[in-house]
Length: 183
Image 1 (cartoon, one colour):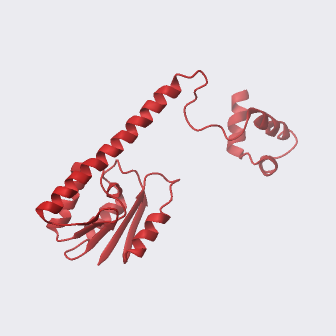
Image 2 (tube, rainbow, N blue to C red):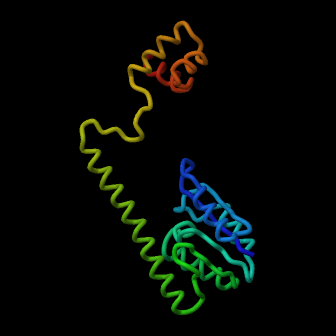
Image 3 (cartoon, rainbow, N blue to C red):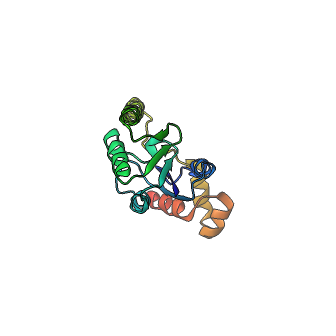
């Protein structure tokens, strides 16, 4: 049987392109989850590994979808090969259970880990530079300006939270937080 696995790291990311690619590849059963790849205990992936048996194929769109690091990728593929499960990584091809196939896979796993580490390093450098600016503020920017919040709080004097939310688009929880800051 041909199984697919799709994963994104955050809830806000979209699985759709991976799911479409796996369906186009002919995967009969697809496991998917929104779970960080830095943790090994991804529930859907662990469940998938437990159902794979000899003759099955595991398909993923990219190597970094199922492995946290080069050593994790190599260990996972070795376990799959020991179960006589084929591994197909769409942007690499079928990983062959031969000395050459294992070598190529090991090298590409190393590059994938290197790429991930470089992204993290660049992100940290960008944060360090941003923190040097006087107006730096950690986290995402506020959705509403101070003026918009003040207007909404004034409306609360004569309207309910629900009415103010309908008028301004500012949620009740945001208004409650803003009110507490004033006290």
